[in-house]
Image 1 (cartoon, rainbow over the protein chains, first blue to last red):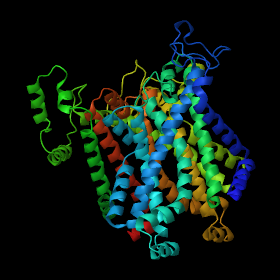
Image 2: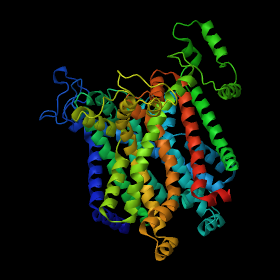
Image 3: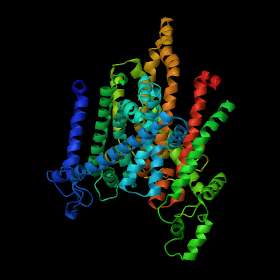
Image 4: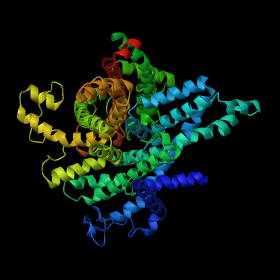
Length: 281
Length: 337
């Protein structure tokens, strides 16, 4: 553990960019936790007298077409955006690792069913499948999470299957079986922990993508419903004003989105360096 | 070659069946009673029952699935509720707009990313390598709708270089006679350079938006593949035999590095088909993505289903094409299969 911490400090300080990304992550997490209390204005309060104001002292990020303060909305939206991405990644992590690990361990029909499922999902362009799912089950926050989790599922299932499969006949598994452990216990206590490092790397590299995906769904109107503050919707709100020069409505939420994704992508690389130094590029 | 295509089609079949089953299930997962929905709010109970029988909803699920497959085999994808037109005809009328955009974006991305990746691998640590790294990292983080809007703001509003983001042609121009449906090609076939320029101008920003989004994976893959090939033994032998650096790089190394790049193009194309929706929304592009999006927002499911099916079939076709290209680039694969 101490060694891991020391290695972690090395990874963080060796690369300035990683350190910056880590600081940025802390900022985002902080905003997600206390956002509603530090936002200067009510994110939903409209003010017709102050609509479409460019960034100023009073409104750092300007105001939108109904006079809502964009800074407050960007801050408050952090929690929702991160929560959606985190839940989607967690869900596909759990489902994918259980399905993939069972497929790799038991083989036979379990493996056939899981690989068919994975192949079927991968036969669709993933964003199109997400659109189809949402069109069928309706637009709501929970459904975006499900849709994002489903299109991410194949990556985790494949990885878990491969990792379990190569260790299925390993000596320590044989030893565990000979000392009387059940299959379920071998899988859960002996094999699964061995899959965790690559799975963690996959999850952290996946976070940024999940944020982009759910924001994209919201942007095209298939996600969070207005007036809830959410980065994708706020960019969509501002898109009509881009052609008339009111750039700040779409710019700041888009910037927040970009920074968040950038931060998670860099940290994903850092986690990979930390856990699996051989895959460094 | 034909045998290989046949074998590939056989491998792709389970995937296609899976696609059809999933689309069918999604259709049945629609909330509420579809018959009541199709009949409209003012319908009597009898009218709803009639529609239920007409749609085959009174039968069992396997029977409904058989009907669904029969209709698909006949090319019937149902009718759109909002326009009353057959979905297949509407999709086919709009497909060229989307394909033209997607292919232009892919061409642009490959034309920029391939040289970048090659040069970055040929001179590791040089400024071009760093530039590639910056582009790859940034490209992975840019939300595509954000880049699209920024491009519109800078090139339309600030600089006035680009036309307004309102579709394939400005409202005063009339569309070329439809031959392929791609305005760029049709206007050339008509011999109308002004029209060609007009549609090319409309294409530039959407193409850039889509292209920038997929630059990153192609450049990264090219760089990694080239690095791998450049350090291999046969390259050392070729270099020791006194071949010129250009021959080494572009003939010996590139051809071997192209295979993994081609594989990654499959994923890139899938991504492009998906984000087409977003770009079509920003630029009011009358393609199938915006058509499907309108249908989703109007809870008109038949067009959405047709769209999902069409996208999945396009993707399967593209993977087939990639496999054929594999054989062209590397004849060993053709012999083995």
